[in-house]
Length: 156
Image (tube, rainbow, N blue to C red; front, side):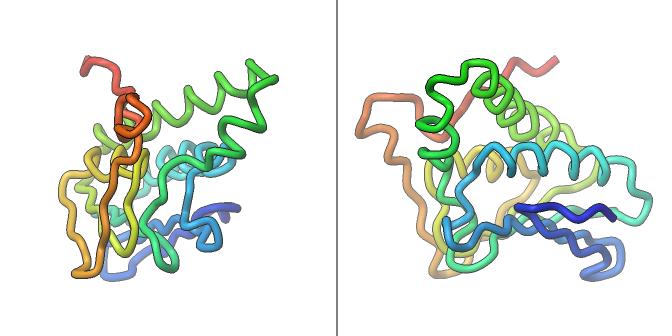
């Protein structure tokens, strides 16, 4: 199994179960361009992995996902339109299509915070379970924008 910079994969956490952990705990697992690249590659790899029968997503540390890393995903790319478009395309594709259509059962295991764009991978999973202390929020409504990064394309 490939090693990734922003996620960790543990195969056979239980027989047939693969645990995929967002691994940016110091940033509360906020999604940056590298995480989108890692998730795109990892989901492609696990799609065809014969040892993965169930995929479980969770977050390292105190958060499932704090949503998008606003600095790395938006501010740092504001003058780099090609890089921004590539990042956005990957973000939409893995959360809005690949994970939603994954050929094996997917489970979101929500620990701690799940905010904004973190909801997108949560609702793309087949099942979701939240820890008793999990906290959810959609702060985008304060700015009058569509919450949770819901950029799904129509199902084909």
